[in-house]
Amino acid sequence: GEDVEQSLFLSVREGDSSVINCTYTDSSSTYLYWYKQEPGAGLQLLTYIFSNMDMKQDQRLTVLLNKKDKHLSLRIADTQTGDSAIYFCAETAGRRALTFGSGTRLQVQP
Amino acid sequence: ETGVTQSPTHLIKTRGQQVTLRCSSQSGHNTVSWYQQALGQGPQFIFQYYREEENGRGNFPPRFSGLQFPNYSSELNVNALELDDSALYLCASSPTGTRSYEQYFGPGTRLTVT
Image (tube, rainbow over all chains, first blue to last red):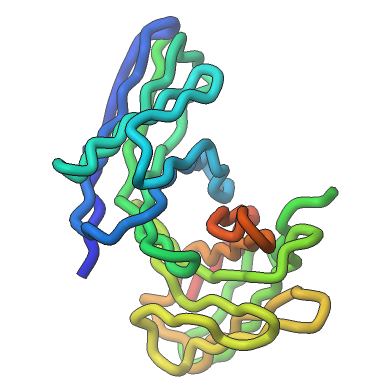
């Protein structure tokens, strides 16, 4: 079945850039997403990319997609303490089930 | 425009009991999906409803069932609760048309089974 893998933890200093990585196995994935979850809260849709794109930029967020290697990354520029959260990568081949990774905990140190 | 809302926020049940969780979709959204998120893990897809019909199901037993109503609100029912059902239950709604691949999540219901 489909699988999405993420590293567990990332620590950066305030003002630095953060890069969160994700790999997936489903070659039929058409949409790939990044969600943010703060403690005790639901998931916030940050951004997404269609599989025929290589890059998408949205303010401080840059998504890079390497479809050949099935690798997705999220770069957060000028990381702030408010960016501390768990970040989930997800993919879908259609408009139904999202398959999520286990999440990467981002810790931003002042 | 209000976002996705869920009720209750927290719930404690005993093994073997039944539970109903509720979700109100974001205005203009006609598709709702339910996910189970165990502690320390990513959400797992339970099922999706579109126009009051089940539109896809994940690897969950039949004791997990759902309903979608004409106003696009939704319920998740779980019968014969087991300890492993303890989790955060999330619903997500999707808009119609070209943005139907977007899923917007509610805050979740934390279910504890003792």
